Image: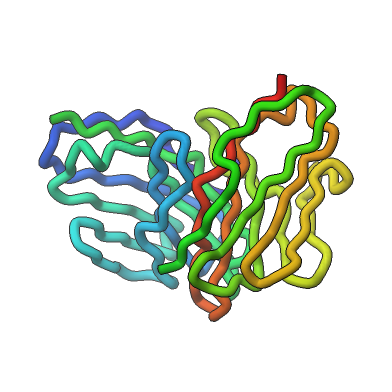
Amino acid sequence: QKEVEQDPGPLSVPEGAIVSLNCTYSNSAFQYFMWYRQYSRKGPELLMYTYSSGNKEDGRFTAQVDKSSKYISLFIRDSQPSDSATYLCAMGQNTGFQKLVFGTGTRLLVSP
Amino acid sequence: GAVVSQHPSWVICKSGTSVKIECRSLDFQATTMFWYRQFPKQSLMLMATSNEGSKATYEQGVEKDKFLINHASLTLSTLTVTSAHPEDSSFYICSARVLQEGQPQHFGDGTRLSIL
């Protein structure tokens, strides 16, 4: 079993839809949770990071962490074609953010 | 803020040559930089962790003599792929962590390495 599981997709939605992206994990020691967006042939771009359980909102993006279920989510409201990319979840165990473990990434396609 | 610059973005070279990739943190000091490798449609795999002024820590299965890492300053780390072969062709990405604790890694735009 992988430490972090993420559906590779692709996930296709129409413009304006609410998108839900998810990851599950097995290591209860993870405390820091991040979502990165990666366009083709580019490095990952940090979107959201949260510590422990709870919600965090930034513009159209909302990150949720449920440590009891070992489940994290990223919601994108009013999705745009420019949101089409691969979304990677990543997790770390300690305060230094050392050695992140990444999901395989979910490819999102938003059609106009 | 937190910009990481990686150079070159794409390199093509003949088998047997060595290739150096630079990773710079432009607007912050990074005590730790990380080197990843990514194959098509796969996630990032950590190769090594580089701490300024000390030897890099390599992940299991990564040849330290093949992938030489130098982190001479708080803003620069280099990865040299020595005697590169076609199987070394991949997308190499670096990241840097801001000096203060609690800050996440920021990534460069990656280097596409093609060995002929």
